[in-house]
Length: 386
Image (tube, rainbow, N blue to C red):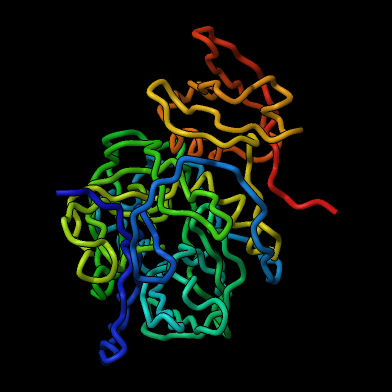
């Protein structure tokens, strides 16, 4: 039986009638899968052995300020129970319904500002790009149309803006860096269309390299995920994973499935098997801020193409003039660590580099002909110039 990474997004069949909204607890959350196909609600499996970041498309938006940031991750919300966390988080989560040429799908989002700026997954809203529609439903049972402010396929994130709304409850943004393995977490969402579903569990692992596909230019969508056993199912994509203070520490985005059938379409969408993955909030908030301001998202890069190797990530190609080239890294070298992060393969290196920002200095360690070499490099940016 093969294992598949599938999007935790809920496909919507056109013939289905809209389901009844519940006042007060109508918020939603969504989880995607480890492999996201070209259309919303579809999952696919693919192997990506290279990382060569290229510029992404520009976003169009009005400058906004994002949600408050919490510096505390351990002090409990109210009595620290799952119930108290749910009561705090539910008003800040929305259900997102998307329609496009490929059909319809639903996911979730996290309210960032009182006037309707919302964070979600790119794969939740991508179907609506180029002529589709996006609608958000709020905790009080109301709904509004929304426009896409920006998308970033490389981190599987997107920012949308609900029209004509005010006085919403922004989520509190926490610090994913404060998480520890075994710590309690809560996920909120609409799995399989079931409104305001709350699940709880623990952090099962940190910095788990998760590859969910690629963008139009073949650059892999890979991130250092938070793994959790809190139940995440199709319909949870884009919603929050929160700590026991109710602060958002991740965006529920992927699930691991075990199925022998094709992972495409509803026939291949298995339920939770206790392997859910969330994008760490620390890594993506700078990109979210860029999209909210109408800027083109930027990403750190070494300027290399890589493949898996038993010892780490093997260099297949080095871009002339890149920071890797200036450091003396050559094709055939095997990168084994970046700072204190051990590199176990291509996805591991991509996920690690994506956790940094352009201009950050890192120490890269690699082997060549059995000898270890090391250099401090300043990471490049995929930002366009001129």
